[in-house]
Amino acid sequence: MPSGPVRALLAVEPGVEAEHVQASLPSDADFSVVGMVNGAEDALHWLRDTQADMLLVACAGYSDRALLLLDAVSRQNPDLSIVVLGQGSPNGFLRRAFEAGADDIIMLPATRDQVRFELQKLLARKQGAETPSSPDNSHLVCVLGPKGGTGKTLTATNLAVAFAQRGSRVALIDLDLQFGDVALCLGLPPEKTVYDLAQSPGALDYDKLDAFLATHSAGVRTLIAPRRPDQASAVGAELLREVYSILRTRFDWVIIDTPPGFTAEVITSIDSSTDIVMVGMLDSLSLKNTKLGLETLELMKYDPERIYLLLNRAHSRVGISQSDVEAVLGRTPDVFIPSDREIPRTVNEGIPIVIARPQSEPAEAFRRLADLLGGPVSEEVVLAETANGGSRRRIFGRKG
Ligand SMILES: Nc1ncnc2c1ncn2[C@@H]1O[C@H](COP(=O)(O)OP(=O)(O)OP(=O)(O)O)[C@@H](O)[C@H]1O
Ligand SMILES: [Mg+2]
Image (cartoon, rainbow, N blue to C red):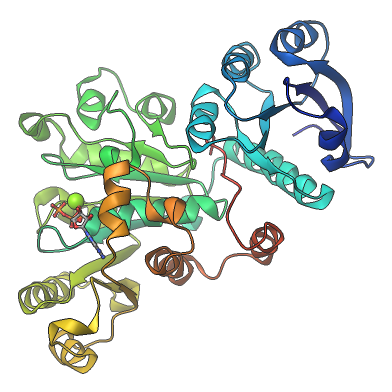
């Protein structure tokens, strides 16, 4: 983070009124627009000759030229913070903008205060990303469910994104080594997987691990499951333990999606975890298995205070009441996720429901789960969201 005022270059794409954009930018001693150029090419030339801390690219709608600029600038100037100021930009463009190298996207119109707040947070986050965190402040959350298809992957992916939306540094690991589908649920191409990591020679450190983590547009860094089931056996407990301990020095939250049951990898992960989210469903077979899962954790002497119980597909029409649930499980679930036909749709689209339908009941429940695990979201994030008209229009950056 620069010690003096932030020096920003503003690149204005065709179709955008420069005065409108300038009227949204902070005007104080901590922030100055040191140059304004029209379009991508001029920005590249300008940056070759002049120093800046931040590039602001203002564009309207889908702009291939802006994407090319983002790509070229992020390669040439890896330390530069790049922010897209979007006006009516479609979703496909926002995603491509992150892929091309944008650290953050701020949707206009927005007030000066909102924009200042977002820029300050971006700079703080970039600074934080370079600072190793203490493993003592980092949590490793295992998402468990003894039975298949209860909603573990749904929970792990949405919880990871909910934490990233609060500004935390989040890593997500797909431990379903045979049939992992985290990459599909997040719309990530499985370019590098944990199998490739296991196969790569040399000692493991963060720089090496970093090269195997895919980056979701919400900022969640993801270790993807092997492409084929036969590759699963290459991933051993020792590697996992090492991966977990390295990730905990860099991320506030490490979330692990697991396969059904207590496999050897799952037990290793439980041993390394600070918290567990047990995912059950509202039917009698699933409840029985959830109870067995809770009893197994008790046998493993896992602190019950660190176990959160999530009841998925919770609605009243299945003939099982809340008191039946409590009688079977011996405790009250902490979070209820209703059945919602938007959920399979968001899974198919590869966009978690906390992003695709932030106001929906399931999205709210996943954010509540994040609150339970991490404490309520800080007041400043709530203020930013309220200032955004209650909707989460802003999409968080991809780095850290
Ligand atoms: N509350 C819900 N409402 C509607 N559909 C849901 C709900 N929860 C889960 N589903 C659907 O159920 C399917 C299984 O969910 P998910 O993949 O998260 O389960 P899982 O426990 O990870 O399964 P597996 O054990 O096979 O890994 C998904 O297609 C998802 O869309
Ligand atoms: Mg799953």
